[in-house]
Image (cartoon, rainbow over all chains, first blue to last red; front, side):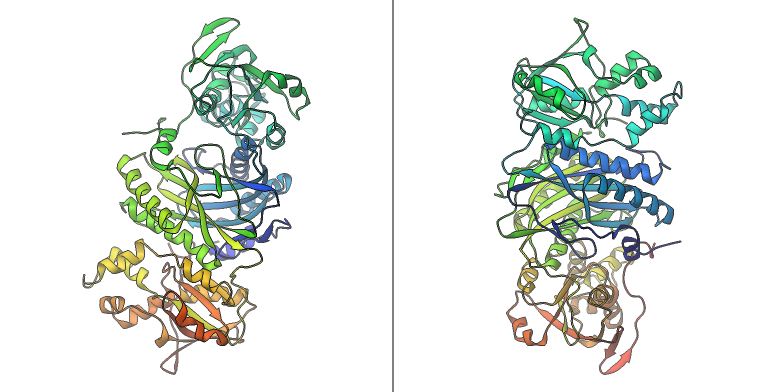
Length: 318
Length: 318
């Protein structure tokens, strides 16, 4: 069955929003929204492209969770509270089953995170999905990449490398299937660390979400904070048992450092805030310290070591 | 030459914004912006896909003007004042010449319309460009599709059909070259009718920008305003001499009604505001009247007539 653009939007995406900040939602030339008194707007845009970010034939509900999670993760990294989302969908055809799966999962996530879908554009072409997300921040506050200082602790939430393990399984199969569901879920359904980001807003000196890999994203913080460096203790890297039991310790560690798209938060913290870490809503690991050396030094059980590759960059790979 | 994503953004898109509403621009996980007191935000997203909206090999500066013009046109249709833009670019490769052309033209237009580029995402894949635009609206005001009333005049700015004529020339050649530049310019560099939209905010009862064709876009107004109808006088349609001299009267009239992407404004106006039309910043034609009949009747020099096709829809054409 083929659907026109207007009918398509009406049928799958015109769920009425009850959000007080949305004066006019989907269906006109623009959405019209307001920002609560004393707040600013945080804005970010993200794309998923077939062949670059996901394989042909990926189920639409998994694409919805991947798109939503990665887009909201940028708000988390800023310490912002999610508010609105807009979509630009390019689809080879208006496939009912695909749209049903996609929109159902998307609205589930919107409800879970308190986000209103306020607009979108659907066009015909090679499969590609863009999401722009908007969040609120108290005026004058934000968690940027540029506030790290020498001596700050380097912290990582959750575990890293899992998403790369999930991708490995998709591309080359899992060496054993025991944790396949867990690893695939980490790849397809990243959890944006919104609550953590909000809690860090007044505490962390700098923050970023791990989309390109720990080494690459940490490098952004260090550079933006004035050509600083870091010492990392690799044994402190948070790596899941599931990843190690599936791919072994060495590959897991490599992926923990260079695998992208975990969408955990990497942040720096003055040591005085150390007692604050156990009060956070999720486990956080201290993996190193900011230095003034302008380079990143890696240590494994006290010994200096090196690691190949430094992260993910669309235009350098393939 | 191949560029990494970070270097690419830095080199071509990190022009510092001096806009007072932008607290943090390009280069972090989110942009952070504020909305002036007493204003609301209008938001719209638009995509251009190679093969659907433009032909392979289209120069990058023309894509920039096409994307910018069509995106801002949605703000014009809402009566909003442009403020910020974000981009999602999917490119087959990081081509220096392409990026230079694209970004130079984009920033020219940003300066012309007072728009700050606040964020973006670049990915590798089949050529596709999305722009999300944000504008300001005085609180409680907006020009929507849903306020037309029986007896209102139906008005169109500028001329319509030119963009379709430009496309015809691209696809099948021009019958004569005299006005090729004009028609191609109307296709590639639409002028968003910002000043007109702002002026209509307090006057027009409903408005839309002509992206799908006069008949199709007027139908959106009539439907959204409560299943209303219209009587159109085809001889009153604003058609350029350039279009008629290139493609003849009959085709020109067909395209004036059903050709999309002119990005003029179509709006409805209570007859009491008729004296207001000559004061507007650009020519506006009264082409008909809103009726209660729930159908659109066409008249040419007093005779009822019919016309084929009703507009452009990505998922029906192909």
